[in-house]
Length: 238
Image 1 (cartoon, helix red, strand yellow):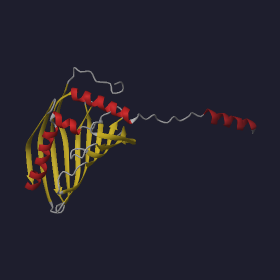
Image 2 (cartoon, one colour):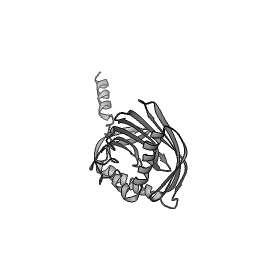
Image 3 (tube, helix red, strand yellow):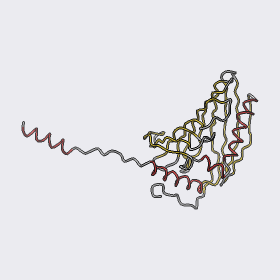
Image 4 (spheres, one colour):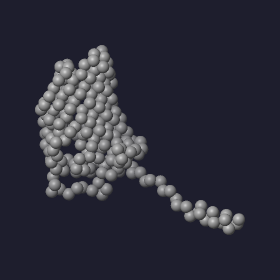
């Protein structure tokens, strides 16, 4: 019996110690994000994507669809032309047209710097680790430093391997109009040639008089051109 107890005791003491996973600080995550974003801005030359917009208003039972071909060229050129439009004229004019106008405005160099998810525009807080379609992500809370309609109060998910933003979810820091009481936005990104490009956008709006309205935008990339002469910047060694 004594021998058995000694053997068991030896097994207990020799059991491996489980090490708690080291989590980078928020500042470290932000530095990695910055390096990935700078690399992607240099690496991506151009893309062409077909996008399908669908919006619906439940109270008035109206909906509309818009298909556009969008071309991005480095550094700040974004062009879209309509392939097909059908459904509610009001939705197409007041929703789809406004989105396309806003995209062109935001994509300009100065305006883009005002909405980028960076410390100049946001305060960040660590939330935890999550699985993002099989990839480990760090979840951060984001709080805008200014009340502007293109800034988001909510959360972001950052890929733990290459430090690109995988998802953004939240609410505009400022109501876009008197008629819109609340908007919830969920943007998803997908990995293309090591970059994180837009995959889909979902939003639910509560509009005065009109009630709940939904919007979905889906991206399908037809061509992506990159600078193949540039070496991939290491996100792990900035």
